[in-house]
Length: 542
Image (cartoon, rainbow, N blue to C red; front, side, top):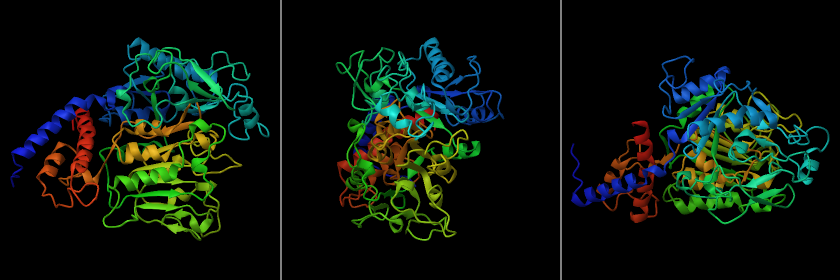
């Protein structure tokens, strides 16, 4: 049946298309990313082939179209470097086997300012060891209490591979000899992209290869960018590379998580966001690196959801899809229906954000068989496509590459979350200290409610670089929400703006943010999502 939209609506939709076209380049896309893999490692080859397709990744099973067939690829085997085992890698081998070949590929192909995102695959290392006490950040590490002495003497160079690669062009370890502050690899570098709301492609990166100047402050130390904003010697937001891993316990789990990330649309009436703290304020702690703290993170994230309105099912004031609890004790611990617990607060609806103190909660319920649940609680929930894992646990990203749990401090692993149906994760490969953990506020603002890609949202949430954090999941994925799907076809594009224009003023569908009135704010939500969705659609041929 034909739909009579009317001339005013058609003009408005046409104008919106012009806006989309004018801003399309500000969306991260396939050719902005470099997929790094090693064909000599079966898992790495398999993940790369699934992601980029058999035409780009020869030697696999064949006939795979690829989820992102235009992504750039680097085979470390072709670069002639030794095979790097998964898990931990020495700092020297990180430079020789990962950083140098990536630099060489980008410079040889004149891509130093073109590539904005690096993607690493299962089978490659995810932890860079300290230069003189290799495993000190497996706190207490090598011998009693090695992490704290290394930290307080300003000589801790441990990092995740992904975090170290964000500063690909900086020779951070230059001068490192095991002394205090003798290199910029010691401690944390403030992330100039953190808490941003803009796409990385709007950030100038013409000076990305220039040597940057830093000053340090406090214990650790924390290195701060120095110099005039925008200058060649200052670390500006565009001077970092976004990084992500495609990793989990098995290749099929990775493939399933990547698939769940495509054409992602959150059902705002059923999707649940969990914030489970216990009054100890770990989410707002400001200790060793106070400049990294962003305030009371759980409260700020919850306020973003409430103020936005799209996840508030009318006419409720306290939406059931925002589940919060600040109480201590096992009875105040959120649990799902897929495991049997002795106590806790049951959440059966599909979860899209699991923000919890996890095993650090003051009181974690036992399972019904009297076994501890601190390493399995996330397996109990039902997850919607696009579910995100961000827990306050020091080693929740340790168990990639078969490293397993840390014996003295077993904690929930993001790899296991992905196996339970999760899609994205940010976490800690080594002991991070509470004030450097990722902020839910920016995962919510920029991904759940926003239109940035996963890689962009993840790194706006991570306050420090050359430190312990890693991001896992398809970096090019982005989300839309069911409120913006005005024509009800489970996709958001310019047709939804046309449909929104044609709806009568009193239509509940037209009131995108459930404020009680359809207005310019609602239209702006549609336009913002159309911009992102149309860019992604043009890129992939959808």
